[in-house]
Amino acid sequence: MDRFMKYMFLGVLVAMTYLLFDAQNSAQVPSQPVTPNTETTIAPQPTPPADFVFFNGDGKSASKVFDVSQYTKAAITISCGADTSVALLVSADKKDWIVQYEYGSAECLKGQTQSVALSGRYYMAIASGGELNIRMIGRFSD
Image (tube, rainbow, N blue to C red; front, side, top):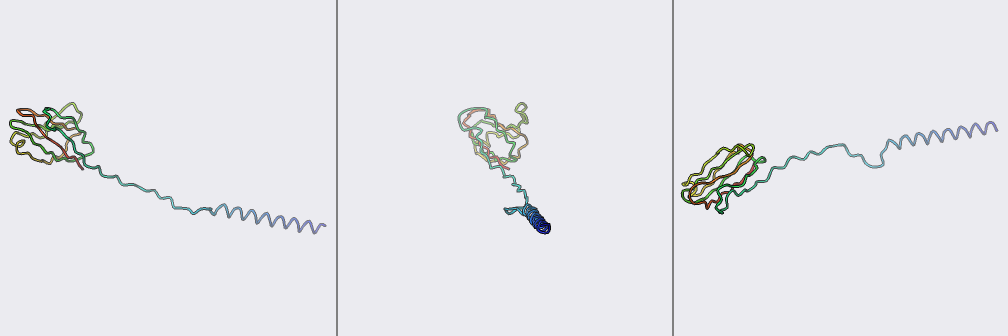
């Protein structure tokens, strides 16, 4: 019996060693495929152009303010009546405004489009003079 117990003990020991070895190996092998850890960087998308209406012929002498922080250039198109002048104003804080460009009555009458390099954050326009039937839009882009 002594011999039988030795073989039995040896068999149990071999079986446990096999199970332990198999458990360690299966723990190292994933059940699903491993994908490499790669981060995808999405390139920033360009800001689409924006059109802003300064004046639409409604007789107002001051336009709304437009925030141009996402843009670097503009194309300003203007048309207005005789004896009218329009100033394109720029500001960094909506408090202190300076004239970046002034359209005189000769430029207003013939209508024109002018490229403008943006130099501040906020833009607006004011008109003075005779007929305030002004049409002025800006196309802002990068």
